[in-house]
Image 1 (tube, rainbow, N blue to C red):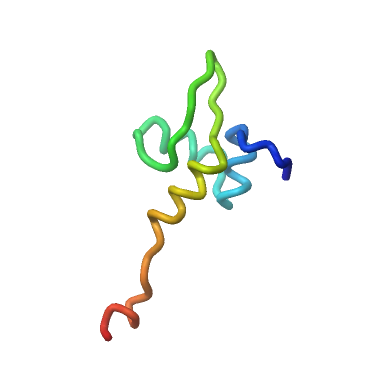
Image 2: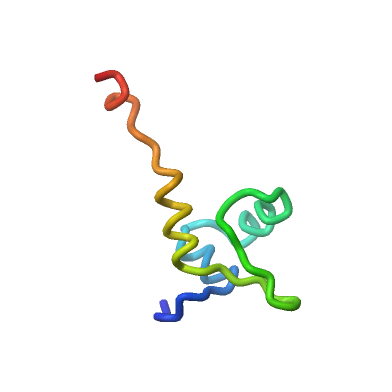
Length: 66
């Protein structure tokens, strides 16, 4: 992957191990990682993707029982 901090939807989907269609669906539902609209193009900033991933970390159920 490139060192560019901005990614196309295809690159972002690969980075997140999702299908590009999932990102399209999430954008339409206003959920998922933040994105930027530049004219007719959509880009994802790597820092936004990493922050979104960090916000969505889930603790295993076994850890919650302690």
